[in-house]
Length: 187
Image (cartoon, rainbow, N blue to C red):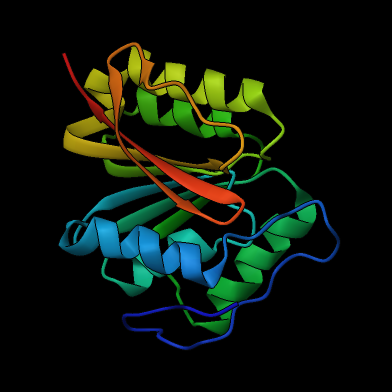
């Protein structure tokens, strides 16, 4: 697993040991960031269910202003910290190691809006998708900046809803067993 582009291009990232974490493939990450394009630079980026941190680190490498990582599995949090340390990234990020809910509630309390939110819970955890996307929809006025995009990685065999309250699905990209669903705030 490597950083695809930007300041840390081609640098190797480590993944947590075992099968509890399924890292986003280099190819899918490249597709994601090709779609996001220039909106990453200068953005506030949230990486939920961050795993190894590869997506958030890719955002930092491509010029994101700040990245919030949320991950509760200890081996994954250790991998995020090791990856950031290996790249000598000392600032411009925060790690919430208790839960996605803790980070989202903290963002809500501090009224921190993000331009990009990425979530990648375990594919089989339908409840995590439902709860997270509905929470973002319910609090979109505070958590999502104008024109923000929410991207969910999920199994291509298990499509997500086309709408979660005000979050409307605008695009679905499939690559093998994985898919990316893009959402924006609609009417």
